[in-house]
Length: 140
Image 1 (cartoon, one colour):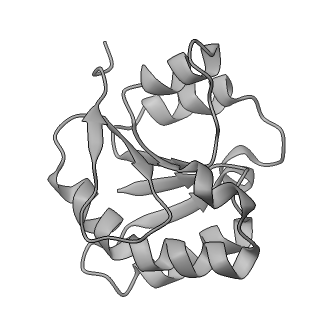
Image 2: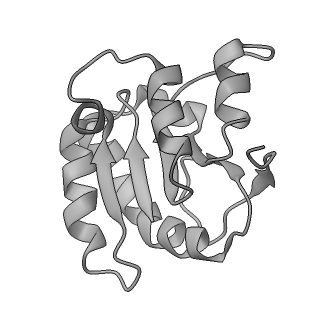
């Protein structure tokens, strides 16, 4: 699987996760939005369309969507599994965020190998060995 790390998460953390993923059995790749898009500020709709071409992408984001938000609708109907870092993550500093996401990473890595359809997970701040998610519509 390939993990797409949204612009609202550090590219340095994406690079660290990519290196650390190589020691897990699943050996996923992790790519930051800036690397994938060739720069900063590419609209979500543009890169979502690129990701939809390959069913092996997973999105990790800190986006805070409001109910009825068109961007939320686009994310949830792209046919791609999403790990959205919960609201508790927004006020954490770099090291705290890095350590917590690395703590979660083996659980996330194992979870994506088990799913058969797109899911969305709201990743809470307290780490756990279990994830709670809901199924998203498959891409038509």
